[in-house]
Image 1 (tube, rainbow, N blue to C red):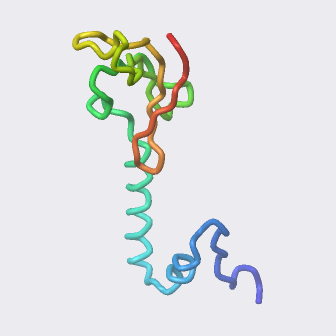
Image 2 (cartoon, rainbow, N blue to C red):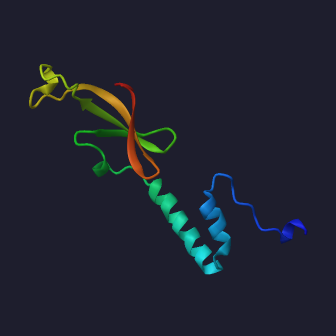
Image 3 (cartoon, one colour):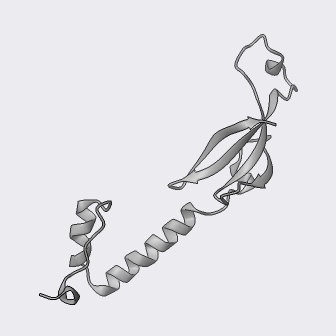
Length: 114
């Protein structure tokens, strides 16, 4: 059998139930799956909207990778005797966080003190 007659090999990262099921589908179903996968990737990589950020978070820039948004935030420490626990106090900071999407879920990571 020549290589042009062999079916393409699924990547090792693909779950077996998908790798076994896809070759059994007709072309229309495969095209629909491809469209869905493309839309899903675009949805997961969509920009961070200001409405997605916590209240009081101030977007300052997109990160250098273009995969997230840098945000200045004031935070509370959880100590009930600290000034940050008082109503109207901004809290500690500002601190810089990067908000990004990981498989569609909004996540944040601490970058540093501003």
